Length: 528
Length: 76
Image (cartoon, rainbow over the protein chains, first blue to last red):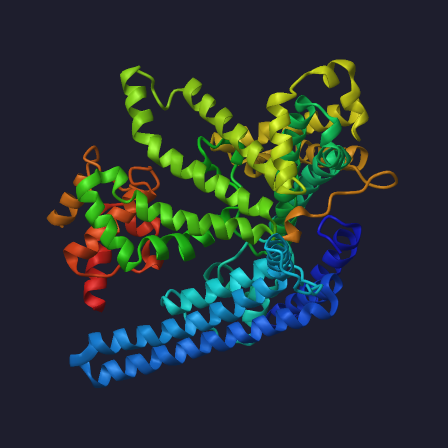
């Protein structure tokens, strides 16, 4: 059962909504929890034991930290003179508990997700070194959403440890936070402080929430079914048969894959946020017009936002602000100045972030390369910023002028497209081969001769996709200029509003890629 | 407070820290400047700024930063 499937949209979601509405406010959280577990069971079957284990374990670690917190406060109360020493002692104790929680949960994630990857690479190394021994690599089934709920669970533990939130004694509320069905498969990665209470409160259904939720779901289906699913055969062909294609087609393939990934992921997130909105629960946004980004750092504050903020809060700051790094920043600042002083600490932290980001997406060298690629681009961006500022000053270029910003957006989009090419490539070597062909075998022949329209998408497909992209671009542009598009639609009279809704529905029904002859793209991010 | 303004002016002298209330949201302080700022504040005021406190509402103005420093001193 996927978010954009008929079973989910026409049966699971309305039935859950109906039972939720008919249930007493105090028990509504239970409806959501049962629905979430049914949803998980439908996807991963008996692998639900992993989710149950993680939930119980995270709950237990939270209570453990809470007990240590209370013990510390009691001791401080009794022995105020040694307040600092007691706090330091308990900080260490709690740190060990957090370390154990990380070890268990990241360990489980690594075992399930990366055993095959590490095993294969060790076997390759043994072969190179002429050893006869080979590791037997077990086939491991991975529960859906483990990368998402593990990060959510750990963020809860870190926040309890840091005193940002109190531990939750209510196992039901924590279980719902860990498993809430709209976001278990592809995120957004929620924080306990933002969503847990809202999930538990059992909000009443309102006309506004139902209307906004349905509107958001339709918008997501528009992106996913008209663009991502329709592009699927073309993308499959390009990335499988790149050997027989010229560089021009490969470049187009990389551009359209980036568009497909955006339409698939952001479209699914629209369905997810819309589903949640129906119940009156607002989830954090995961996208903010990423293709209006001025540089790669900016792009990652607009694309998969909740993953980026997770890495920022739980890896970037803890690493770059660890004691030795802070000392280094203070010393280097005196020697290298304001900009380059903190750059070393920042870069070390960024390396940790991007290695984690790459590996989080999957167990393959393509993902490791994807992470390192972004790390290098961001560090280079940081290094050359003062130089670019100086050049602009010298040449009297206003960095906020429209042509300059436009060039920045184009440059960032090109870098993103190349990154996504490696991200989608079947192997790292095929990624490099495709990249090389773009520069060594570039031609417009397939466009001129029309052979590009025989690669899974014909002229009609591309026309539909381009028209849909124009609509998405216009909406994005309005949002970028600060307009609240949804409020704008709501303010229209009933005739205009429903005409827009019907047009959207008709567009999905007529131009959506579904039924015989179409294989919709599997939700790409659900595999991570 | 004066010492804090001094640290901030050292990081970016082009801002009026007595009136500016969007140091983060207005991109006057980027992530690298925040690393320097945290390290300098901790060194100067002998406090430890937990990472959970590195949020725009605490870093958007000199006043909010000062309030954070005072809170951390009190907790110590």
